[in-house]
Image 1 (cartoon, rainbow, N blue to C red):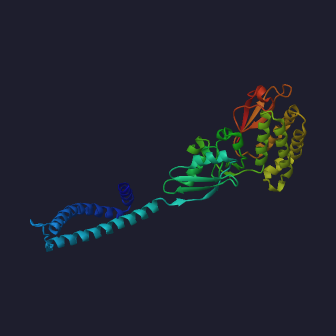
Image 2: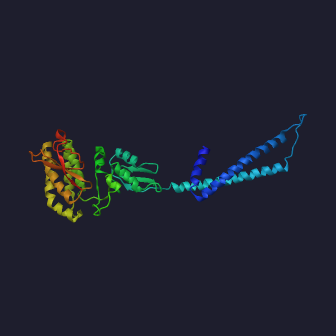
Image 3: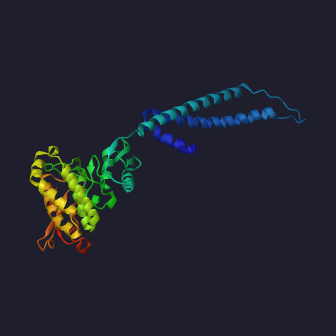
Length: 358
């Protein structure tokens, strides 16, 4: 244990010039100590022999240590003091140096998620030898401790986004988000910045599907609820469809035009009545077939909103050519893979992507 401790101290202390000086002194001290220990053993053996020797008749003979022996013993005492001073100096410098190189920064950031499974994935993505994440499910924030000399908050949040979780800095790739377990697919309330008009090379983050964050438009909550509605239709779950449609109707009713941008206000003014009526019709539909018919009109109106105010992530407009009496019907999806909400498992992959909105 002592040997390992000395190794650690040596490696840490050598990072500073003063530490290297002390290590040099320590090396010289070790050589001197070896010689002195040898001398001490000889002196000790001589003293013990003189003090406990007996004459041939069995009588103890008292011996007086010679001045030379006393002088050598005094030298050994001085060397022990020097040894303690140098060792203490090494320890102080090592502790100081270690503290300087393990200074941890701990900011609190927003990371989206829903449940305990999200917590496990988020923390696994961000935890390493140089960083540690503690994510709070209740308020969807995380305390991130990291060694600023080894990594950065930016680097940690990239890892979290690549695992499928939007955060203050980066959005997760659309495909990664779509692959999350159903209970982990949180509401996405952040959006990407406008495209850079300059012809800059594609960054590593862009090529991996990461997108930097800006605040989402006012229609984002509508898009999020629409996607939940679409997923319920894919699953052919009448009750969940009704619940999702009711939530969508509530969001549409609560939307305030004063909170919208000029472009959003114009789009909302043109579509508010239609989309609200179609959502209500879907909510009141008495069976799954009628819900799917109403979903056609809802999808068309949400598409118009998405064209005026871009969603947080790329959205794919897809079309089933067979529904609606062969006229075809469209819907929007976050996943490029087709999952047909008009037929569900009956013809799940019927259809194709006809447009990407981003």
